[in-house]
Image: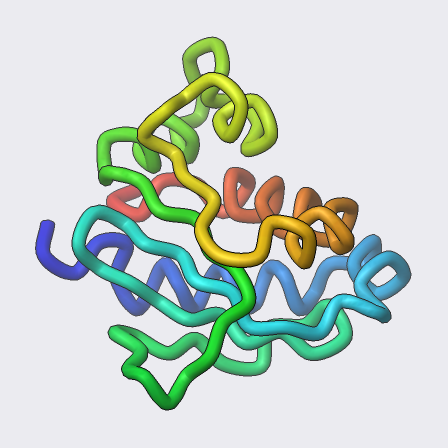
Length: 132
C-alpha cells in the first residue's frame, strides 16, 4: 500500500475534523503542524485553531513540525478498524503500550494540546479504515 492512507481518506478526515462542533470549542488554542507517518508515508498536518488547513504529503525540510506519530501500517489498521483490539482503541493507550506507535518530536507540545489532539485522533478513528 504505497500511498496509504490515500488522498480520499485524508480529505474525508480533514472535512470531519473541520466540521466537528467539539473542536470548535476545545481547538481554539490548538495551532501547530504535526506529522502522521503511516509506514513509509509521512504527512504534515497543519492546524489553525483546531481546523486542518492543509495536509502536506511527503513534507521536506521547509515544513516544520512540533511533533508527530509514527507507526507501521498494521498498527494504523488496527487503530482505524471498526472494532479495534485491546490497546488499539485509543491513541494514549497505544502510546503507552504499543511500542511500534511512536510519538516523535516535542512531547510537551503534544501534551499541552492533549484534549484537542485526543479529539482529532478520535475523529480519525470515526473516519474509518482507509480502504473502506
